[in-house]
Image (cartoon, rainbow, N blue to C red):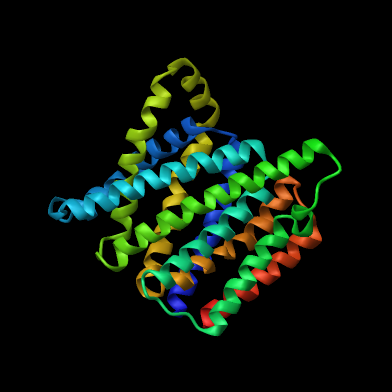
Length: 293
């Protein structure tokens, strides 16, 4: 992994952790996902038009197919993530989503796309996964909680975290193929896929406009912040994929757990601090091993 790709991933991790904390505090559902997608489409329209005016008309069925698949997978990812944040703690959902997704995408990249990874890289993946496990609660995830309500909340967090991770793995492979093999612009892949997200989420809003209006007035500031910063984080990752193997970039994104553990844990008051810090250190070591390997 090049130093440039590594720097892009570090910056993307900080941005990603911050917008997830904002999304958690918003407490929104699929309508919040629509607000975010709509604002993203408007805010980033000048850049999308500038980069796409000569490129997009040349796209064929393959390119549009990948854009459609990317948009569909991102809708599933965001809706499931928001549902998990409403039903469980961020310090359970976020680590499991961030840990399981890259692990799945790395395995796909190695087994299906023919990418190679060194022993140090494998150790790095193990470090990332182990750190995520500690931040998510460590051994407490494997034993029943004394409080039935707390146990149910942890179980829901595990379910939604792993399901979100499956969507992360899916869109990482789809988008990674688009930028690495088809040589599509990372910015255009994300921006044009957003039109798909708006179209898919619009019926949810149109079914109950009065309620949507109330939610808009309460959540538009959160949605605007996510719309502005979230594409930056993901586009940085896609650019990193152009320079480094997907099997290294995907797990290295877990550096965001360092920031989520230290910032999100403090702001939201969730999780055990000792386990969270130990997990963050383990993730840092794993990311370093990936960068070197």
